[in-house]
Length: 252
Length: 252
DNA sequence: TGAGGATACTGGTCAGACCAGTCTGCGAGA
DNA sequence: TCTCGCAGACTGGTCTGACCAGTATCCTCA
Image (cartoon, rainbow over all chains, first blue to last red; front, top):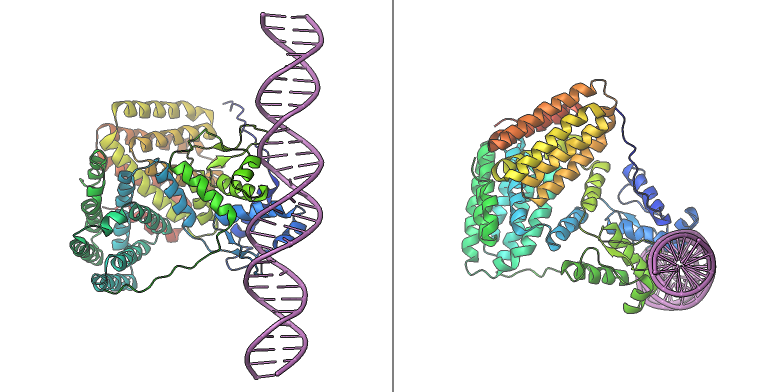
């Protein structure tokens, strides 16, 4: 039953890291809420008993993580920010940029997320949430004449409404992030597509079907629709080699 | 068809951000590969024509994003790091810490990820990958007598093998991250549980079943097993109010 | 009462310095 | 000839002190 002695590699702990930890900890424990302010750099330098450069390095790290934001000239000091998926988005974007994941994997992941979101929405959505979906769909219909840019915004809003109805913040945020990255990869292709209007109308029909399935509480159908729709919409942009992995999510 | 003039809020661009961008860009375009080195701070300060503090702030941001790593005394300069899910993990951990998501949502998300991973593994796993799963399962059996710590490690390895067989890096990484966060939240409860051994043996049986389903290419069963197993294992740690959302993923 | 500017702050950047640590290469000893 | 050990030239981490361009505030003056 002897547990072998497992040692962890040690890294020198730098002063600015300790500062980051202290501030993170305070935020995590709710002692520092979004909207509240940190002391000014010069005051923190006194409180932490370090130089201003050290304080600033800590602030840069916190800022890059989206936890705080500094604005020059603001006498109230750096602001604690509410959670934002920006950091997540950046991580995923990075994975894509370094070719750690390809478009096929992204689309597959999105199929997985949206099919689950639809399933859960069909099973848990409240009457108000169903109404919100109605409105979002109407907004899409209205936007179809105002160009792809506007339509895309309305489209995103619809997906957001459904994702929110899934009652799972993680699904909501991840859907948002992955959708954003996918669109970033191919939006230029869509924007230059000759049959834009056809694409929009097709998209409309699909979304109407999804809403119908959600409204009639048919989770299985809503879930399947998400996968089929995404496949129909994106398979053309995915390399032949990656398409089988998308199809693997269709059958069942 | 008039697109309303959409302006974006402007933020002052700071010098260190431009440095971060330049380096990120070089990494994304493959001009700077993992293992390669950045010039020393003093040399970058000359190349970018800024002061060392500015270079250092840029390096801190890159380092907090896991892109580079500095080690004092290393004459080769900061190292470009391979992709690591650490940044993702931190984002998710942060969401959990600020109560943006609860244990229920985490477990639900994990059910979703692992059920998909199992499904895909059943449909795509190669013979080698099946063998690797066999080995991982054997390692678990062997670890059961060596305490929870060791067993848990083997357990993680098994899940990793399955996730890898799904052929989707995003699923693999997210599973890893979410599993880690969940375990971080409740591992102390398990470690102090009186019926540890019973838990481990139950876990073994479940994993054997999963492997069986994957081997016989029964994706639907492998997928369902993941959801059921996770529910059985974790529902007890989830608040009553959140349990229905887990059960919503069980039926079908 | 209202508009104006002085003031005291803020963060962003710079310059130059010291320290502890690591790596390298040279030379002394075997 | 080979090995060991030490000196030096680097590295990053931190500090001090300074300047600048902004912003918020308040106080004065019309």
